[in-house]
Image (cartoon, rainbow over all chains, first blue to last red; front, top):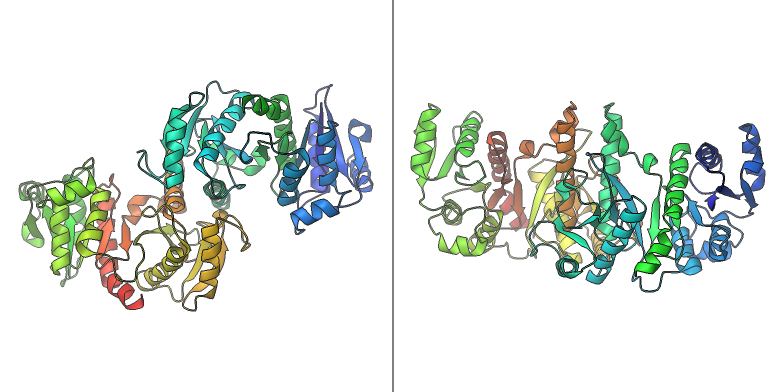
Length: 312
Length: 312
């Protein structure tokens, strides 16, 4: 099994990315290989400095970099020898089983749509992420930023995609699905959310738990899957980031609040495309990169893209 | 100056409400009077028990109660001698300068629209609330639940209403206004938010600071006013409630996280109607009630409804 890592992505690339890759080696099984994609000069220099034998990785040399500020679609099509473009081509050809990057998010999304493509039957892919629950469970929430406006059938399908993720990646049996809303009653919310409620209620394959309100997030009564549009999901995620930041700045110590650190989660998988892809935070450092690779492996092990193809 | 208090509203009414009213007495100026509206038997019994002279209040006896589970519009029109209906009539006639209740929110909103009415020129009233900032400032966010779907001109106007609130109630000079969005760039967000960005940017009366992301909430870079639709605002507020709950349950101690307690804020004013009205949380106890009355007084002192009338 081969996982591709974009060595040139993240504000702290390539060094922090290579450090994270080296840390991941401890978790590597014999049948697994991590493929470092990026400038080989930088890679050899850094590995030498860390006294790591380069043969422990596969190394694919690339000559271009999609910068954080680059226009995603333009950069993706013009920089054909960038680490992101090369990674996607390897993914598409089957040379890689999964690919992850903490680089230009837009370019990663362009690659997802134009190189590996959306799974037929999927209306809109989504970004899915883990919300750590105070009772030590992990829930997933989607979408967290791809589709700010969602039609009811898209929200319904997010419930299905999220359930598949929870079942095969998090190994939660018959995951409960909540529709994020501003009240528990089915008369609450936007027209789209109200219509989604009706669709989800009627769907036989969904363990629908009804509406879930904002004060249930992160708590004992949080469902295994939370469905919302990408605008709301993005705000929720970033608000949690804000509280984690405040928690740290106040010098508080707590094992739960520590879990809110995005570095522990590592990355955000794209669900609904024909391959296993995980996007990391642009400010990822060593630990976040290691966790992003671990998460990519978990998605590959679960055979997520294939499971979704079979279900849709 | 007379403030009306619905003694029958809140899950812990009437006792907790009367306790909060008694606590408020310490803050009362000579030219102010608190008007207790509700069952006089309960009021006299409780005041007697607390050894408080009833003449320190004005007491208006009512014989009906709008219950939390009642249908708002139906209950409001049928229970004409309920504390909420009577309070609104007194407000309309000018007998009261402000009115607050932690009772049936829907009925409070019905009263706002049908008894005191929306200010001409206001597209949609909003619920506004305070977000405590880690640097000890207070910001305001609106809407937090009245209008889940907002058109661009409504969002623009929320920027104006929020600025008036920040200026006259919180006494912030030239308050900065941020539009909540999922990225800083003006190309981000839903069509409605993108259009609102253009409107706000062009509006001469607004100190517009551009888009503000979720990770700036509660933090040093939070604007004085945050504009969003009622769906997103409601989720933000309740997510903060969830984190405050978790903070308490983990036995952490921190002066900032203590400020997140809704009981310290007390209530949510309705802006954009012809009167000063504050709605409290249904689970309000003694301290929350006292703070709701204090907030109502602040709104009355600022002459908020009149200030909005003049500005719109």
